[in-house]
Image 1: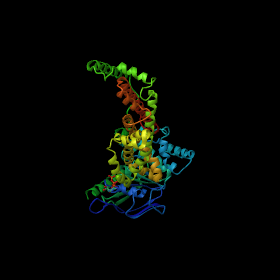
Image 2: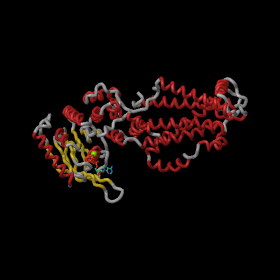
Image 3: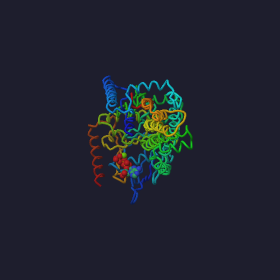
Image 4: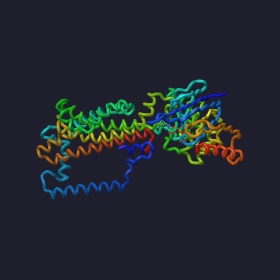
Length: 252
Length: 275
Ligand SMILES: Nc1ncnc2c1ncn2[C@@H]1O[C@H](COP(=O)(O)OP(=O)(O)OP(=O)(O)O)[C@@H](O)[C@H]1O
Ligand SMILES: [Mg+2]
């Protein structure tokens, strides 16, 4: 069952002089409920732009985005977003960062506390409720970012290179954590990454984009059972195929 | 001017109020050296205009109990008069500068419209207005308005800068969490601006304090530390004149110290640095 449907998405940005810059061209994708989608593509091909348009942070030039059959025109609580640079509110504690969306929904403080505690436990931050972001490591900050997005109970989680700022070891750990959270919450995830390895490890389906203007080059179904082993021959083969494709996209 | 603010958000703050014993000792030795040099200067210069440190110290303490022959009040009254002007002018400036700064930082159109006006008035030393304000607004409001102008611009420009430097990622994050314009303003932009505002307040305090003494020397009634300095100079009581200057220095230290204290409390409240 499709929960997110993007048809013929085009996004252009005006330029100082000359014609508009076409960031995304004719991007069409149906995402099923509960699916884990990874979008891969060369740098500057429009991945962030696609995600921001789905989030409603950017107006599309033409085409249509629907979530649960409703047309997207602005940010909404059905879509949560996780940022590469975490984007936590530095003056708020872990708990109050997670409660931000709940405050805006005007929930009572007891209700907020109940919900935030659920997600603090889910992402493994028990004991750090009253810490401020600057006191946390990068991995822990992104746990807050994930919990904050989930606390609003969106159907879809949009993640823009969420582990891009983390070291390799933390990154692997966070990938496992994310898979666990995904399986527990049954969210639909659209995940952007530069890393083929990360995409093959996480995704149900990988969407490979061409270089700018970004449009779909290929789609790979990853049927490898989880937990996936990076050393398995199928994993290595898939990674190589997609890497070659990306190299080709980069050089065109 | 804004370098402290970055530390503020990253949590790497300056360490305040943590002086070691040797630091204190060295500072005291520095002060003693200063007093000795001062004392020797009086001997060498041998002019009636520069009194000995002990004379100033004596005049300082006497000024709080004796009434001075011109205004007929003690230093306490002068202090009270100056502080009143200072507080009213300072608060007035904060009340005006904060909302206007938030608005100008947020609205490009408003800022473009206001910019020429601000740029015309900013370079004029607040003191240049003193004679005009004194004649038009009288002995109380006149000096108050000089302070108002002195404090207004540092707060205004810091708040505008603060709003403009709000991390766009934070605004996006708030929007995806359901924030509308009012929420963005109250829950993201305003808190983000607070450390910038405090930096402006600290600068404003220093400038305001300088303004008040000078403004009182140009025109004031009913006492004031500036007036006291002026009067003592006029009747040739130089130890008293220097004692007045010492009072100004002490009050300046107290007000800036107070601003620092508030800054620390605020940063604790906001959960950044100064642990
Ligand atoms: N707000 C904007 N105004 C103008 N041009 C923009 C804007 N946002 C993105 N672009 C341009 O659109 C193109 C796609 O940018 P986008 O950030 O979506 O790429 P990306 O695939 O996320 O890149 P990266 O892999 O480096 O994150 C780039 O050429 C970029 O310069
Ligand atoms: Mg990007």
